[in-house]
Image (cartoon, rainbow, N blue to C red; front, side, top):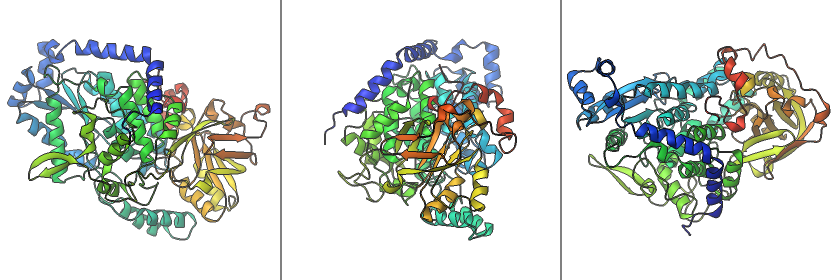
Length: 603
C-alpha cells in the first residue's frame, strides 16, 4: 500500500491551518512568550518560593530550589468512587519516588472534579456533565498558575475529564505534558447479555433486582468501563495524538507493565524540560497534524460522538478552528478498522489483545491516512506503531504483529466499512451528527411521523403507556447546552431498542447528546441551532413526517416550519435541576454544539 498522504487528509489539514492562521499565530506567540521566561521558578521571589516548598521535606525542598532539576506538576482527577480514577490513589507517591531517584521532584499541583456519567445517567446530575468539562479546564489551568513547574503529568481518563484537563493544560502549552493512563477493568458480563437485560427491564419483563445484578457484573472493579464509550475514546484518540506513551492506553491497572509505563512516562517527561536538549512543548504536539491524526483514529475506531464537541473545544484552546465539515470529509475516506461495543460484541480488552492502538495506527499509516511527520510528546510517530512489553523488569517496545482477532481488527487489506463511524447531517431541521458504525444499513434511512418530547423521562412514560408501538421518530427538543446543559439521553436506548426489536422503524432526533454507547438506533444528535435558541426542532409538531438519511447526510421535513411559532414548553419541572441553577451563566452565553458547546474557549 502507498504510504503517501491521502490527498483528502492533506486538503483538510491545510484547510484547518488556513482558517486558523490568525488564532494559531496568536496562541503560539503567547506560548513562546511563556517559554522565553525560562524556568519560571527562577523569577519567583524568595517569599514565593518559600510558600511553594513550605510543606516539603528537606530533600524535596532542596530539589525544588535547585533550578537544574525538574519540578513536575501532577494534576489529578483521583477519587475513590469513580472506578476509572480510583487506581490513581497511589500514583503521586509512585511518581514522586521515581523522579526523586533521578534528582527531580514532583508536586500535586491540584485536583479536578471527576463526575461519572454512568452514575448520573437519567439523573439531575447529568445536567452538569458537559459543564464540568470547562470547570475541569479552569481547575487545571489554575493548578498550573503557580509557575513553579517544568512539566505536567495529567492523571485523568473519562468523558469530560481528560478533554477538560487537556484544554486547561494548553493554557500552559510551553510545558512538556503527558497523560498518565490507568487502564480498563477486567472483562465482566458480555455486552450482548447486558443489552438484553436492559431491554427486558425496559419492557417490564424482569425486575430491578435482575437489572442490578447484571449491572454490577458489568461494572465490577477498579479501571475504566470496558465498552468503547467516551472514556476509552479519549484514551485511544489521545494516544494517536502522541499525548501519552506509545501503547499505554489500555494496559490493565495494577499490572507490572502498567507500573513500568507510569514510571517511564514521568522520567521521559522530566528529561524533556526546557534546557535539556530534548525540549518539547505541548503546543508543538497539539498542532493541526496531531489534531487530524486524532480525528482519523476516532473515525477509524467508531469512537464516541461526544468528540464532535470535545475535539472542537480542544482545537480552539490550541488556536485551531475545527469544524464538523472536517469530520465529515475525513469520514468519507477513513475506513472503519475496529469492532468494539457498541460497534460489535467485543470490549476494549479484546481490542487491546487484538493489537490495540499500535496496530490500528500502523494500519492507518499503511494506507497513507496519518501524518507520519506529526510531533508526538515522545519520539516519532513511528514509535507509536510498536507495543510495550516487559522483558524481565526491563521496559521495551516491539513491533506489533498482525491482528490476533480478525473480528475486532481486520487483517491485511480488509476493512469493516469503507468509511468512518460518524456522519454529519444537514437539512431544514438544522445540523447534527450521527454515529453509524453500529447502525445496520437497513436502519440508516427512515421516514416516519414524529413524537415530540422535551424530556427523556416523558419518552419513558409514553413508552410505558404503549404510545410508541409504531413507526416513529422520537424528537427530544429543548435539551441543548442553552436549555438544560445538553445531557446524555442514553436511558432512551433500551426503550428505542425494544421498539426496533418489535419490528417498527424508529429513530431519535435531538439537540441533546448521547454517549459513545449510542448503539444500533439511528440517532441524529447535537442538532444545532438548538430549540431553546430558535432552532427548527422547536417548530415541529406531533405527527410531522421526518426523513433521516444517514447515507446521504440529510435530515429534513416537508412541514412548513417557517410559518409556525416556536414551542414554549414548560421547563420548570423535570429540567429545573442543579445544572440550571448552578450554570445559568453558561446556559445564557453558550454557543452552538458545532462550536464545542463552550463559552470559555471560543474566539
